[in-house]
Length: 162
Image 1: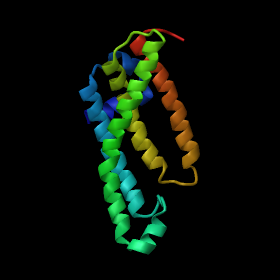
Image 2 (image 1 turned 90 degrees about the horizontal axis):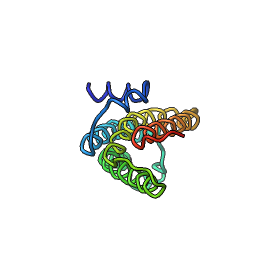
Image 3 (image 1 turned 180 degrees about the vertical axis):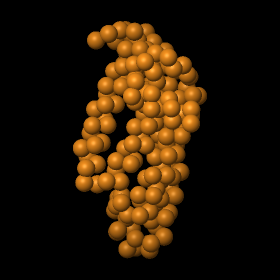
Image 4 (image 1 turned 30 degrees about the vertical axis):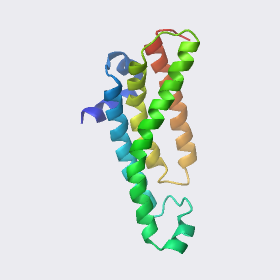
């Protein structure tokens, strides 16, 4: 429940949350792993029930219906793992860019704060993708909001305004 409350605060009161929350890479990884597991479950369910096609019709033709279950299980396994890798790479790239431009901040703090909002947004995107008709628009709005949240993280970590 602690993580859920932190996620809600990060999405609804980001500036205040980013100021008060303290954490390191391990804490951020826990958020990303939990978010990745939940997103993986949602995506696996969508894959299994055919919401996410991803070319499974063709695979099912050649390998039978069991391939859908196999892909769903692979999704469940790899989404959390790839989420952590993507989070670390993304945060490292942002940190390097910030350092190149002369900003002084803390990589672990930056990564933790990014994890605070990235994990719930990954879950939201998985849910959004279950509704194909409006998924693009809603995913774009979530992406736009994530850019705003990233801006707030940079303001907090690097203590420089726009």
